[in-house]
Image 1 (cartoon, rainbow, N blue to C red):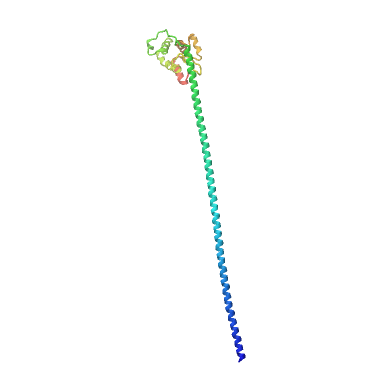
Image 2 (tube, helix red, strand yellow; image 1 turned 60 degrees about the vertical axis):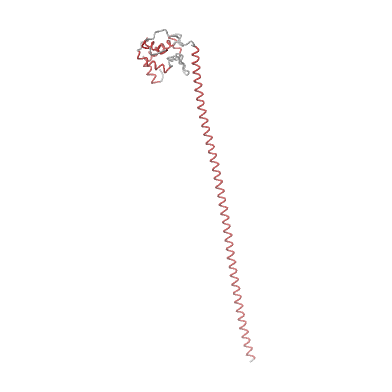
Length: 248
């Protein structure tokens, strides 16, 4: 009987130990699972932290890149504006120089024209002073056919008729010498030196008609009529040539 209870006790003890071991194994398994879950959670959290840090780092890099680009664009725009301003200034300077050059040329042209006019006036004044008493008086008759004219023109009309030309030639002679000298016995071309009513070149040629060729319109007209007849036959022939060429 005692031996039987001993066996039962041993079995009960064995079963108890087995149950205790199983319970302990279950506890240990649960604890390991909890530990594994905790470790997994920690890994997930660590991954999330790393991702956030990486994201922030990339955002920072992008912000720096955008700031650099904006600065680069601003520098380029400032440089372009500076270059454009410099180019505009240079163009303005060139334009101002061109304007000044044009004004200087115009001023020089006006000065040259004024100097030329002054010389002409001086030459005219010199001629007038040499004959301050006026032209020599004409002593010949003025026919009625020349009554519409006065002064040197009337003398010219009269002497033209005396030279054998008809009265219808006088309008041509009148226009010719109006163009050449304005019928001024003291007229002198400052460029060529041509002188007198017919603008003889040189004026001393008219001395063939008289020593008073500087002061006597009649002497100048006689020489001029002889010149026209010798080269153009008639005053109208001389006028036609003058119209074609600008001279006679």
